[in-house]
Image (cartoon, rainbow, N blue to C red; front, side, top):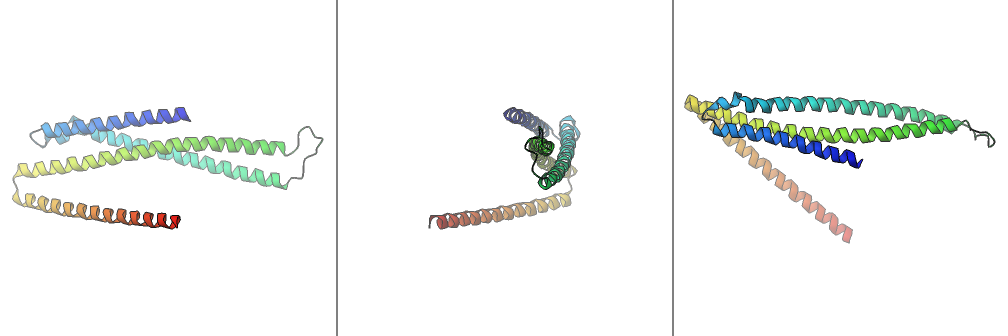
Length: 205
């Protein structure tokens, strides 16, 4: 289990470094470019390819999790049947070399061991999936920023005043929405702190 955890941490570090590198290289190309041509160049395409790879990996991990859950349900059902059969048996012959219940007990033990193994595999796959989802979220957020920058560059290059005003209005609405969400989040945090303090005081009393 310790070795599995170390391997998973190393994998996370390597994946995170790969994502960070591609995003930084895309940003560097965006900043150094004098026009919007950077959007369709190699660095930005590499970011899109990485996003697609992450989506494929996420789908594969999802399939693994489904298979593990199905196998776990099969083992649980089988174990339940064996336990019911064991419960219905009378006491074994005290002088028998091997009682009739022994194979049933062995079957239950085997299934429980397999369930334990499945739980480790499930945890490993789930941790990898969560890590992939975090990286996908980071890539998507970066893509949003890059797309907005590209759109603005296109509008500025076109010199169309109406489109400039429209984007300025969208930016203003977006800023207002973000500020409202920040305020809502802050209020929610304050409420959580208040409830925690009330709970603490009740425990003290």
